[in-house]
Figure 1: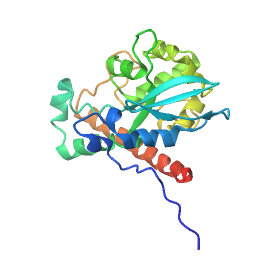
Figure 2: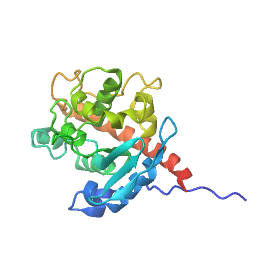
Figure 3: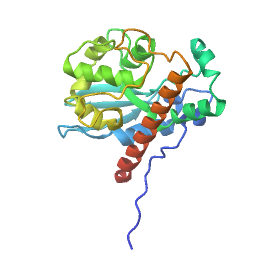
Figure 4: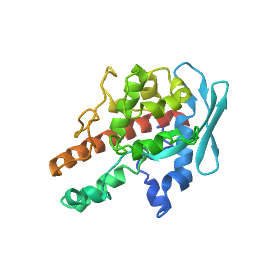
Length: 240
């Protein structure tokens, strides 16, 4: 009789519920351990990307490949607490907003980025939040990463260049996507990112302008997170 393999990553686990009212990215030890387990693995060219846990809930790598400190980022904007979005959000049933928010608190909606400051300038995580043309959206961040590997300017190109040594670890866009299990965010040929509306090629702030746009963005985002969670769950079966 064969034993059924089980996952050691709970993809339904809500990290913010663990640390409320404190920020889960900074205080959830479960989240820190999940990141360590998931992303300590061989890079596309075969070298091991081993991560160790350090203070302030961060992760650290040092080898002949270089040295980098990384921190967690719940990477998807729900806009549920944005004042300028309140008129639209208040028109959505509260249970749908709650489902959306809770989904973005699971591992499928969370990323790690380099957190060591370079020249006292903003980190990737900081720039994603402050840049009005990104507005903390993960799909648009991934589109900027695609353009970065192609040498095409984008709202995040300058900050990505500061962390060029990090992005070089993955070789190319496909390598980055596969490493972080983001295949559900791109087309099967990796040539396009599945960006949700609204998106006007970074011409303006990409916030939903009405209820229909918000619902479309919400549904597309939930679908992506659930798909990535399934991918993470399948991957993590082999971590035992």
